[in-house]
Image (cartoon, rainbow, N blue to C red):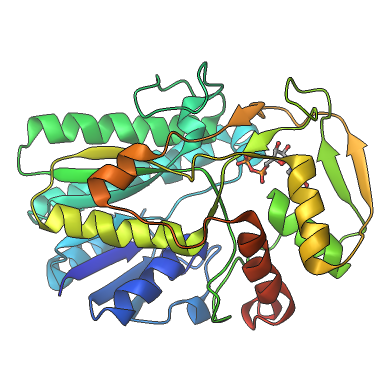
Length: 330
Ligand code: UDP
């Protein structure tokens, strides 16, 4: 059994990983300032309510817990907000990550799993996009993730004992089927969540941002991945590092894309609600198509997704929105 420090473990993806870690008997400490996460979402382990900016606290926690592996989820994630407040994003996503890495180095902790993003690719020239494509982000959020990836690369070069897995998430959605955790962020911007909220009547209508993209139906195409499959990838990445695996940068997507219109139709079908939809202008900073080349993670981590189905992703998200306790506990 491993000792795992999970920053941001009270958030959407982190809480799903903590659940899997706890279910398999690992010892977990969650480090989270609860700025967007929730105490109720931490189903296993101890929650330390603290900020990554508080380096003294961080060193104290790392020193007393002595984790085998650190998983780093805590970050800001809203792209338009990052454009408006870049310094806020660089401080939290880059500087605070440095604090964490420095605390680890001071205490000789040398295994790290990083929540990266497909946003590091910007507008890729080849689809599906492979891990070899250049880092070319088009917004401060993506830039902050790309910067940390470069820091990790350099750290691994400088210290041969340090190893990491950087997981580049595509579009994460859905919820754990048991209904105890799911997405619970006050003003969601993501497509599937907004469509579910429109079906629920929580928002008046769903806007489709742009219908003149160079895609078959004119709307953007994304690779949607179920949060539990993504959580599973973290467990495999952890085992890989514990077995002595060398550094890896891996796409986390299914390798299959759906357009905004296809997603909207699927949400209407699954929920049985014909909610209002309005087509409007493009949203700034949206690449037309983002689909993962997904073979590397399958071959290196032996990742075998279980929820690789758009309707299943939507169904679990809908269960969470309508029956899940968390959505009412924001
Ligand atoms: N989108 C949309 N309406 C919404 C939210 C998103 O049309 O209410 C579109 C968005 O412009 C993009 C796609 O859905 O083309 C996926 O956006 P999302 O914010 O879910 O994820 P992103 O790919 O930006 O990380």
